[in-house]
Length: 146
Image: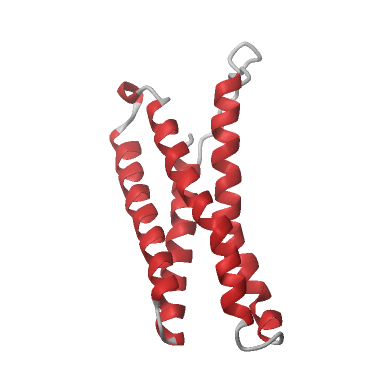
């Protein structure tokens, strides 16, 4: 079972301005990268009604937004990592962080392979790998946030 932490008002503090910027950019980029994948997936049946080339055009348009978001996630993720006191990190935190990094690499690689795939089957497989790894990275990020 999870533990409940009761804190006094003196223990709770607002984040610094720089932390607010860093974390806001990270969450915004995750919203575009992860959330956008599911928005596109949900729109795909309707987009297919617009003609044979429509899904590819939508995917390319989404790529112009999602890839910069992915790289912003990587950059702010490095920034997040550098902003913590590593002496306080437990071995379980370090292990989950390592797994999260593997998920980030798999998410990027799977999504990239999706953009290069030539058959519908391989596009679907790579899209699934990219989406599942993205969700896993997101959940693990929440876990290591404490």
